[in-house]
Image (cartoon, rainbow, N blue to C red; front, side):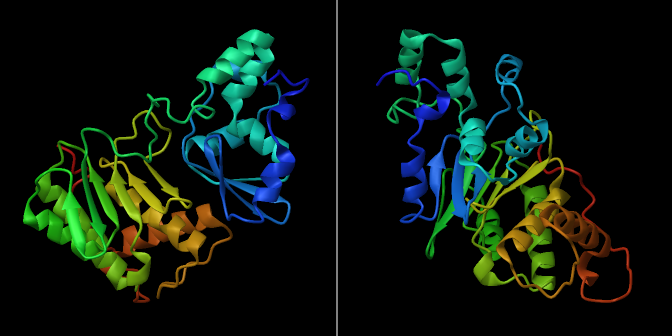
Length: 290
């Protein structure tokens, strides 16, 4: 491999576009990408905000796009070159700041070109080493550690494909949260066939938000100190996946829908299908982390 004259030459753009004829999505850098017409949608799966030195070296980066990618919000690009820029910022930074030999050596060390090399920074969507991970495989439920039957039962009732909990979770508060989620999802007629999403409780202190929804991986992430944010993220899931429920929420986009859905659920509690504006009791705890 030789150093191309422009950073765009790092990619076989024609081949990338052609591949969409055969596959629905492709992994490009930190994004899983789909193409509709000539629009490319990036679903972030492994993205961190770039360091200031990278931002300063690559003029024209848009802070709103960086913020969306950092909070696992899908971003649409009209030009594939712009998509490749944001999904490969560290690689392009190396191209701009290293000479030929230095750059080629850096490429050899890049995990995207050497998949077998160990990745030291786990993605937010990966299971933490000290977490408890419960998952179902058809009718079989398994757990990475021994957990009480009551927790397995609550997991089975909620119907998610998997559940990740902090290693120091509080059992009683966890059970209350899962039952609360199930009761309100049942009340709004959330279909059983749509319950196969992945649910993760992770402390998100280093992120600018307290919850995420990843459409591509169908994963809901909730900071256990803000358990009601689950309903905001489920709002994204409902809107983005076109899920039919018996609650009418008028909104112009996914974020608007998620906020209105969260507000309706948290205020109205189990009386969602009634027309009266009733303040319902919400579980009296802000966190189930011990």
